Image (cartoon, rainbow, N blue to C red):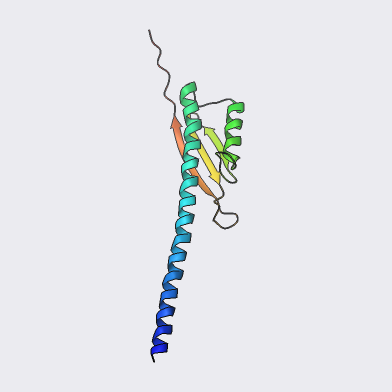
Amino acid sequence: MMLIEVLVSILIFSFGILGTVALHARAIQYSGNAEDRGRASLLANEIGSLMWTSGTATLSAAVTTAWNTRVGDATATGLPGGVGTVAVDADGVATITVTWQPTFAAAGATNRLVTQVVVPPTAVLP
């Protein structure tokens, strides 16, 4: 009878260890996802800052292409499968979209960060 009690306690203990390992694996996934989201917001902030410093929401194609190249370069500061787009509407509001493929997600799954930037008109000093 004592041997059965020991086997049952080992079984319960092993389920607890497996649960702890699964919890740790999910924590690593959430940490990686948070890192990617943080990087996406920094990249969107970078292009938004360029708009503010230039005083216009419409940037040159060379600047936008260079930024999009940085977004897609996962070996440096970019994101895995990262693509950045900037669309400016008639009111001068820029919609910045950063899309990437999460490392731990299923094939074809994507994450997206969307933000809008309104560049105020520059003040003319007398």
